[in-house]
Structure formats: C-alpha cells, structure tokens
Image (cartoon, rainbow, N blue to C red; front, top):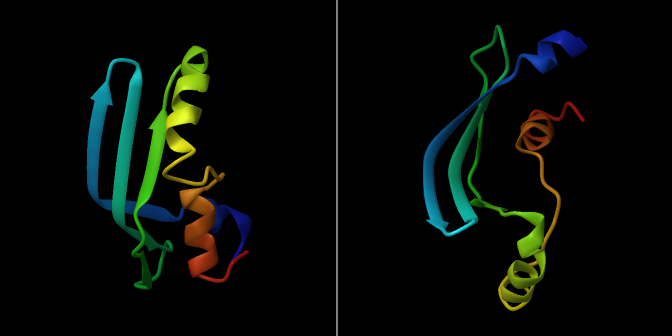
Length: 88
C-alpha cells in the first residue's frame, strides 16, 4: 500500500465524552474504528484514550494532580490505526 493510501485511512470514534473545568478539558475516546481506503477491512481499538488539554501556565497543577493517577505518554490515534493493520 502506498503512502497516499495510508494517508487516507479513516478513523471513526464511536464514543467521545468531554469534561471541562475552568481551563482544563478532558476528552475520553472509546471504540475507535479504523478503515483502510478501498477495502472492507476494519479494525477496532478497544482501549480508552484520555486526552487532557490545558494552558501551559497550569502545567504544575495538572502534573501534580496526574502524578497520582496516570502515566503521561505520547500517543497517536493515527499511528495506532496503522499498527493495527501492521503498516508500521
């Protein structure tokens, strides 16, 4: 599959929930569905993805809160989809 076809991979988020408190927004995505173009092949990513968005001025407060509950990592939904299809 060429790079243009990979760039056209479609992603569908089956469930998205938002929470907002002051300058902090939390998004939870579940049941991500990935489909390659020109195929009927679909893959589902079952884990939940939690994104936390905030102003850099709030970094200390957010980091302090999250230290007790999570491990911060970089994550790309697009790259995860490519991994499901064994393209990367």
